[in-house]
Image (tube, rainbow, N blue to C red):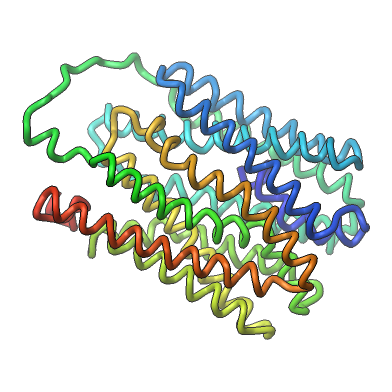
Length: 383
């Protein structure tokens, strides 16, 4: 996922330096990627058979490598758009089906549902893509086409552990549905799901704008030559974040931890819009990497814990709104940045949306108290 989807971020300044893309066309290409992700989520939502999930997971990894290689084969924006579209589909298939398959394996083998290590892989992918582009461009000075081909080759190497280390799913055991009042009372309500989806939708705008344009924003501040380095900082902050946020959640509650992650994201965006220094930009990158992985991991881990039997489908449903924001955010942000000459207005816009997301999470808290007279997200020792 780090190569197929996230390598595009540090490659934007490289390709822009060759006058191949502008801010708006970069946003358009990112939008194509997120539209592919949206299509992939519909597939995730529709597929319930474990063997089919496993097939699409492995098929998605192969498509990701092919989509990366296609970026080197043509300079037409339409070809790149198709590449990003299929990279998005493969990212959704790999990430969401992978999470669902792991939740199923943990549940079948009597383990608690903890996905922190799994979500760390996304941060590692960011680090890997940033280091690869930095080495290929700055150290070796390779042509942009060769950089994409090397990234595809690295993806082929990663196919081996990504496919080989995930066990094949066991046949599903169909347990009788427990319809007792106590069990049904613990299921989240439709209102709860809509509120969580609203909060996650708001987070999609901030996360996607920063994911897409971190390197370019660093170059424009101006901090020439630091674009890929800032993306590396984001990845380094994101890699341990799921484990840290998981520990925080078990200490204070998943909902409180999620609200804290939203607040951290807002602070990071405000720091970014009010600084042009290297130190301030690094601080903003750290806050963003740490918070965005916290938002993703806490939200999806919560769904995995609450809907163990159908985690992939519910994760897909919850992520649909997030993905719509992912499509709109880079297109709108890129166009605004190109017309205004800076990312100040897009950043302030996502700050406002993140505040709205916090409001939704506050409503989630009220929904939990109203239905259960206790938080739905149990603290450590209360499960």
